[in-house]
Image 1: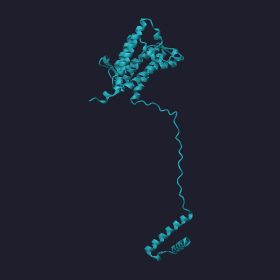
Image 2 (image 1 turned 180 degrees about the vertical axis):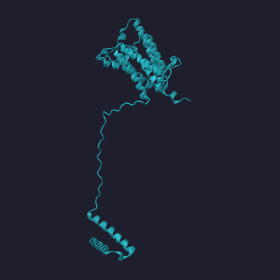
Image 3 (image 1 turned 135 degrees about the vertical axis):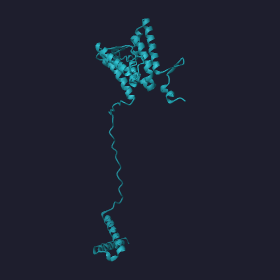
Image 4 (image 1 turned 30 degrees about the vertical axis):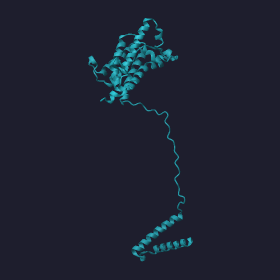
Length: 284
């Protein structure tokens, strides 16, 4: 019986290639490898003008050629670093995808892919810059190191977290040595995003809540309380009080006899009797 993990669309292959499952991380590798082959052929036949329309140039983007923010990663010349990047995406990307599921993994990689060109577009207002290739697979490795910090790095037998720290430190030193502020910003922005994304998905980081459009609670008008049609008057209240006193006197007579009443109590009883006779005569 298959479990939910195996049957969920989030963890199924994107496609099958000659009987082998191709997951989202593998599919991204296929796209970049294909772009590397196309780049090689275009350079071979000296039609580099096509590639010039794809690379990221801050000045061109600021003048409206916004597609370069997306297409810059499709210009990949053959190199050892490209092979290493694809290997990192295959080895670590699959584990990150397995943890998050296909949809969140693609969101993560898409954001990591766009961080550098978006930042460079903003910085291009002061420092014109160009970005070619660089599939941004380092963010995938940082995400893996955040998820599994103590996992050993294959033949190195070093915890992944230490390898990540070493690589970030070396990249920082190289950028400082070359006085390459843009590369330094890209490195730390990518690293910070990958770490924060994982921690947020794990529930260890919460985004601040900003209620810019918070509405004040509406005041509600409550209906008036129903008033009695004929509220008791002062005379009615006095009559009610007198009848209570008369009842108490009658109870006393029933228990102890008429002689048990004091002169004041007899006067109250006589007054109540006279008042009652007066009301009865008025009704007739």
